[in-house]
Image (cartoon, rainbow, N blue to C red; front, side, top):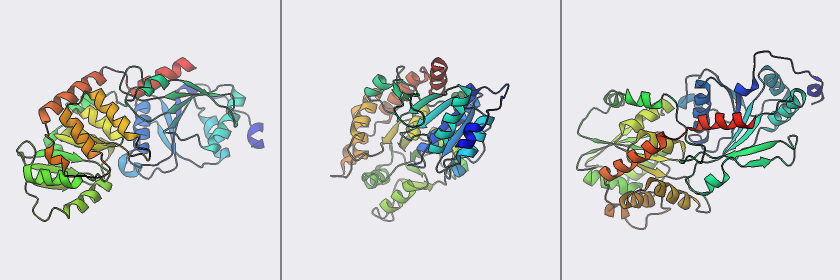
Length: 383
């Protein structure tokens, strides 16, 4: 630490800290936390910013985002103070983003405070929270939080809530998303996955282990979807494992249900999956947002919490959608901790009503500011 105090921050004419972002992600769910952070980092980079993404586990990026993104540099969480100091002198930070309750890597914080003490340029510090449609999000969005202790005592963080209304930080949406969606060739992408029939309804499945999964597969095998056979596209990992176990209870005759097992998909191809399907089952937050942009009927499996708080969160989302009774009923059945009875058999899958609901929601959300734009505007005001 003493050597850092003695060091002089070299002047770097032309390098503004305001275009440099440092995002911090400690991985709990490989598909969720790091997925959101990579999308955010890439979106900021596409707008001309430089981003360092600090994470304790970057392994999922190997398949999720195998191509490097110009402007994004993935950094190890436990880099030494000396190495971080050198990095910060080379590219001073202008913005710090702690994601999903994590805190800055301790070594980074020490190095950053030392550099700021010398340069006098304090970064904008943002605590990026989880996505929710609950009322508290609007109340708490952008509130300041003074740092009470530690090397950064006296600095100030700000809570930043993604959300579904203009009074929140918005949703991740790349500037070219709609153009890419409009020029997407669904049939070609499905053929690339080995799906060639035209008489099947396409259903994507990205889930944890919902107890209602057996009932859903049984319903598809017996009834199909809207009187048509169902092609279920199952994502790799926990979804595939859950379906494999569920199929053992259905026997060998799957009737109107056919299954395609997908490999691990890049984020780009996960979007293609959602755009190709007639009905999307998604889980967590990142895939929910992507399914909203897809604009197709969706069923969300929310991340379960020990205190059951996910039920209020789910209700708030369904209220926001103004979801019809049938869509609510399937969500409640899909998110139950256990199956009391085969309740799915009594639920009407009303695709026209669900399509209208999701199309309306997408139109409203597209009129609102996106997350990267909201962050950059907010940071500019706090400098």
